[in-house]
Length: 207
Image (tube, rainbow, N blue to C red; front, side, top):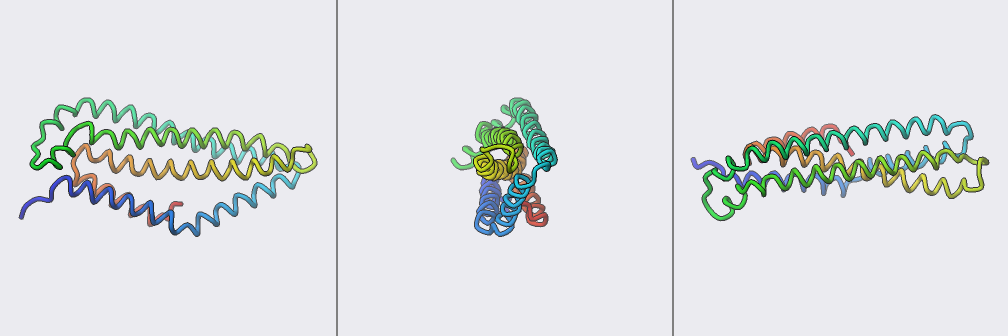
């Protein structure tokens, strides 16, 4: 029995990642519920003077989580560059048959996806940190504390929703970076890694 072409495993893995992401976008009932809860929490905090300290502490936890993920992505990016540089010649020497196989075995092609995804992770998580930081200022203006209360509430609602969206997309990009990084080993390993990641994602129902 002929072995499965490496490029076929890569295409299958990418298709699986894309299908999972598309399914998440189309079936967002839990996401909408989570968004509604965040909005209710913001309104409750701003309507009750004295709760702003607890609110800022809660936002600080989100800032710490986003910072941790941005740092992790940056470290992974540097590690991947180091590993990729050392394997460039080895990957280029791999036997390849048809034009598609030769193209997919090019070291730069195997590196560009995980590198790009990890770079996107850094940008997304850093953006979430910035927005959560801005939210903390808005949550410090409860009802009666300032004439800017209404403006602060609208700003907090918009910014916390954007921050949550950036954080969620950052996680998706991080998953994809892990899967595509496995391509440095082989297409089969990438496919297996993708199946495991998607299975865990579905089981955990991470939104």
